[in-house]
Image 1: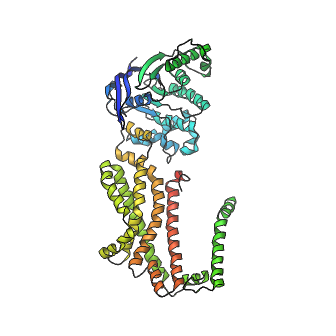
Image 2: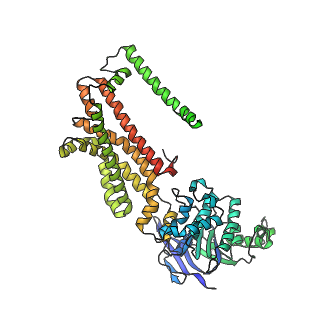
Image 3: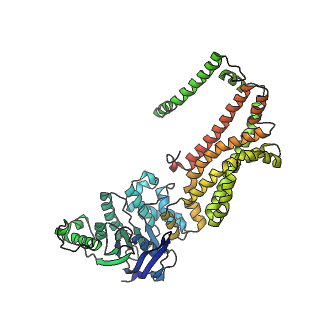
Length: 270
Length: 256
């Protein structure tokens, strides 16, 4: 498997009014093509910053980032981004929102109309293409944001807590939906690579091939766990013993709790 | 039908109050026996409003032109200056302090200077109105262009979109509601400016009618001019409100 992302000793320090703040330190990570990788960690551990460093949107201050064999020095093309908020343009119809990347990239949006309709159909929003964003629910808006990210068929998707603002049930639905879309939009170059930031442990376990656990201030990689749950994953996956075991392992890593410690309600799951 | 009924009940309180005030006014004038030059009755004002002793149409056209001109200069100039300050940081730093300084000047005090420089006529009155009304447009344009979700701008960066394209596709539409709400303020300011200009020196216009009616103690005429001025102001304000509903329907209910 070829690596699509290679992070080598990546560090980032940014200046604030009260002095420099070290956001990231010594991040080493290689992501293979078609992998689904989640970054989990407490708030302020720099996981969102790391995502933007990979995209070339924020400059690292040390180390190197290589994406698709090219060192990253400026925003990289061929990447799809999904943020915590859907950030749809509220003056545009749903269809025109999905077509925005084509316009921004200087392509003719007409050539992408068919693709946009297909993507909206894929997420069950065909009937909404003429609506405006404020007529859609939060979950629907995030589906539109996903379509927008997929429009130009980028091999790499960067997702920054995309379902963090949704209620628990919608979130579970969206997880299933994302895996389904991921499976169906592979294209000729195989499955897309997804780098997914979340602070939900079950979400990370459910979605990922590997979970990167980060520790805070400065953000470092504490541990990388392989999630060997069979695919395709379904609602039943969440009920399996392995799922619970993985979740607990990550929980222990994040909280510093020792497995088998007494008094924890979660103990039985291990 | 239901819609008409709802609108009727929505407007009923305001209409009743307006009518009630007119009745009270009329009763007060006739009851207290006030002289017409102190406070003319509504009936006297209505009479003056349609009297042929002065050429209302001519005065309305003069003042209306001044108001519209003031509004357009303020709107176009304000949007241009606001865009300049938002386009480049250097430009913003250079322009903003100067604009704030101009805004703190009492514009009415500048009116005689404008007359000195540009002579009698509609143009100096337009400029006074524009000077009073342009600043909110500058500020709101700049704010609307820069108050954008950082994620939204990242979206532009990811696709290496050129600056003008980010302005055209994202920043400018984002600024519409801000600009349009400033234009409502400007609509009112344009009226003030035009009338002030006519007060200072003029040979026609509704402001001129007020000034001259004062010296001849023809107060009903002054009230008539006031009515026409408020009708002009309301018409411009209404036009901006309609424009904002057409240009930025998504912003309805977000601001007033």
